[in-house]
Image (cartoon, rainbow, N blue to C red; front, side, top):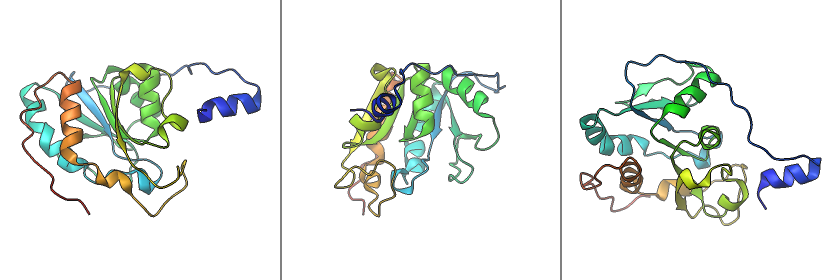
Length: 195
C-alpha cells in the first residue's frame, strides 16, 4: 500500500490531486528540461549528474533545448545549466515544471510536483521504495530508472549505503534523450566501474 493511502486511511481522508499555484517566471528561452539533483536525504542524491549533463548537452544544444537546475541551494551547481536554486519561489518552480519538456531527478519533492502537473519525467528510484512512495497521480508520464537500494526500504531514514551511485550515467543520458525523442546514438561513453 502506498504511504499516501496509509495516511489517508489513518486520517479518514480522501486522496485527490492538490491544487498547485503557479506564477510566471521569465526565461531567455522557451524549450528546456528541468533537473533537480537533490533529495533531503544523502543516500538518494545521485553524484554523477555532471557526467549526465556532459553527455546530453551537445545534443540538446543542437536542438535548442536548455537545462534548468532547480532544487536546494546546498546542491552542487552543475556547469552548462541555467542555475535557479534558491532564486525562485515554489510557485515559480511549479510554472517552470509545468512548461518543461522533461523533468529529471532522484526521489525528490519536485518529482511529485511534476507528476501532479503531468510533466514527463525520468526518475531514479529504489526498487523496494517505489511501490510505497513513488508519485501516484500520472504514472504514464514517468520513466523510472530503478536501483537496488538498501536491504530494506529506508523510507527517508538515512542509510550508509548509497546505491543510487551505482547507476551508470549513460543509462540516465539515454533515457533522457529517448524521452525527448532524440537520438541516443550520440552517447558514446561507457562506464566500466563505479565504486
